Length: 209
Image (cartoon, rainbow, N blue to C red; front, side, top):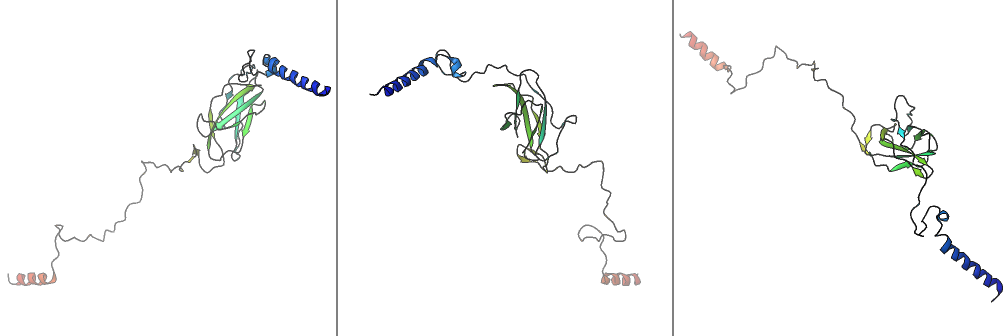
């Protein structure tokens, strides 16, 4: 066996020993995974947890808003201490957030685009400090502009009906022609009209009285 091959195998053996012995005993080399006993665990973030973000009501008259189709502007109170970015989550049902923006940057406003026009969405925001996310903010809902009607939970709502004031009565009354009298229906108890023969008979009786 040649000397270079022996040296190469000895080098590989030394590297294997270092991986099996040195790395499990040093948590710094595991980048947060594992502990001094050599057992691997999930990643542990040592950053401080950001405070709860104050999310403002979307489309509030005192805040910037947009009327662009399928867009909603979110505004929140920016954290001053330990949040370097913000995460947005939203969905079409309260508390069920199936969409999101993982990194808005270090800002206090963000325009959520590509929403379904006319659909109501529910939004929350939280601050993130490096690898540590904070608690979710208060939930606010808003309807994405551009739709013909409001949709809640994906269902089209019927258009509103015009309101009716019960105190207002219709001014139209059925027309009545006073010259036309209703005819008497036979068998209803009304007086019957004599026939021509009965009229002549009554006239003759009057002559002989």
